[in-house]
Amino acid sequence: MLGNLGLLAGLALLIYMALRGVNIFIASLVCALVVAVTNGLMIPRTLLEYYPSGPLGAFSFAGKFFLLFLCGAIFGKAMATSQAAKSIALAITRSLGVKHTLLVGMSVCALLTYGGVVVFVVVFTMYPLGITLMREANLPKRLWAAATSVGAGTFTMTALPGTPSIHNVISASSLGTDLFAGGWIGIFAALIMGGLGMWYVEHGWRKARATGEGFVENAQDRRMEQLAGDPSEAPPWYLAVIPLAVVLGVIMLPRLLIALGDWSTSDSLLAETLRFSQVQPIIWPSLALIIGSLVCLVLFRGMRRKTGQVFGQGAEDSIMPLINTAAVIGFGGVVTQTAGFSQFAQWMLNADLPPLLSVFASASVVSAIVGSSSGGLQIFMQSLAPHYLEMGIEPEILHRIAAIASGGLDSLPHCGAVIATFVIMGLTHREAYKDMFAVTVAIPVIACLASIALLMALGMG
Image (cartoon, rainbow, N blue to C red):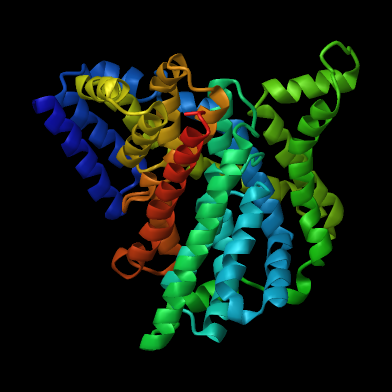
């Protein structure tokens, strides 16, 4: 009884400390100690094994995925510094017009994140540009936050096949699948997330206009707007999209070549490269991101004079997202050692639920506990996924459904990405969380359940 109360207390304290802005490493370590003490775990093993270096330890995760975070951050820095990301945003804005401001925000964020630019870079890059759009359209900031989150934090993160997102890579590296696993069901879920998400924010904008609610500027907006710089310095859009196309091309080309021919018996360098791409779900997308960064250097002359600075800052930018994700996984590594977690796992595995619904519930709850979709997905893959494979779920289906499920309840109020988005935009949970909940929690849950229903109807679940 005390152990279960300790688990709840640790989770409640983690949520409270995250909302109060406490450093996530300090918060996760304190909460891990609360869980350890109330569950009778030895403190030395908690601090030296379960939290940092066990199978679900913070630094076990950080070591495994360091290269992907590093390459993704460098690519994001290259796209931001060269102003290629800005160029793409401006081109889409000119094409769609101010009256489609919400669609502009969603589309640009979706394109950039699907192309490999990390979410935090996209949000930080888009907001200074978005201020001008919101002012001209008289759009409430809470709806801009929701629209950009639809593009950057839902379907491109967990559902669409081929993306070098950490969620796609975690599933592939854990299950031995590739980045395109369960592609068709991912596209189905993505259409639901994107369609319902845009319907929600557009409906919200119509209601806001009817009630006289509009854009309210503050001092932070004026500071952020200065970061947008001079639009005339941005490269042409047709050059700006090339690095994104290169990243996706490097990831997708091996899959296409393998589909067109049998390379299993060939000893050529091309055949070896194709086989390497299929068995290296971390190294291959990392390589694609670095190639994209080098393309930025070739295309954008201003980048060449500060190559070392851009790559160095990108490397520094990778540290905090990696460490923050690792911290919540370290907390989860302690939680998984408790009797309460074992009881939860056994209850879920033995529950009278269809296997895919059990996957959805398990991945969702674990992601909710740690407030991180990538952290929750890693914990799920390490602790529960093998049991679902034994039940007969195909690895490709488990890959996609677990990834989609992890991107729902993760976005509760203590989610780091939600908090960071609100800080960047100068919003509070009271002002904007209702809309964020709708597009990043409720709608992804609906999409995942609809995908499971379709698979079950087809006899695949």
